[in-house]
Length: 249
Image (cartoon, rainbow, N blue to C red; front, side, top):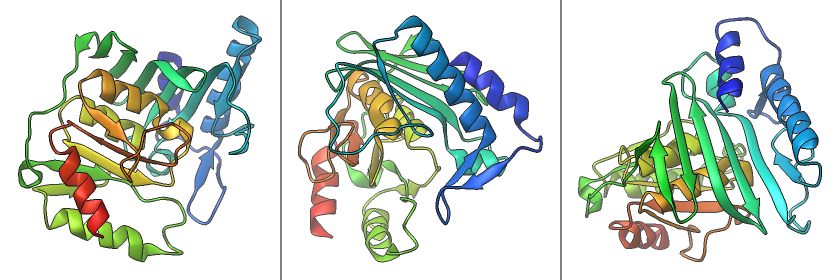
């Protein structure tokens, strides 16, 4: 993870290739370089392990879940990165039978390494993490993200955004789901929601939130899974209020 961060920072402010995977979905040559290097490392050290990454061989939604799987996003926040906005990271989770057991998310701009181990806790640069104590939405700072086809149907996203704005202290949109989740774990945000996410967006961050004492479910309130496609993460105290707001829209 630290190596990925070094590669990211080495190219900030430099000219690099940026391509489109969709109308507003970007990929840079740095994403590809980092993921290619990661896959080579796993193939050498753990040849029987699978890699689920954003840029190569993402896998179909109906594919069976591997026994051992590394879920990797070389740059979460690629649009920010391509524009020189220093809100991006690398995200990695190791799953056993679809359940994350260890996680690491590294923000090189702030030299912040978020880690977690199932049943053992979560840490920021080695210091234990704990979610916030906000008990009501009006006292909460929330964060969300917009999926890449938001331009096709912005109404649903805007309606839910407006509902939370009217109930919370404030709502932010940073552009990196992985960091959004880390910031919930660190108590910087009190809650996060987003639809149409991929496993590499949330697998690591969800474990970090849970191990920091937070609550993670699907947006409809059902059990969370990295392949569920949506996530609602909070400090636990405002979770029911967030679910109620979503259900009312």
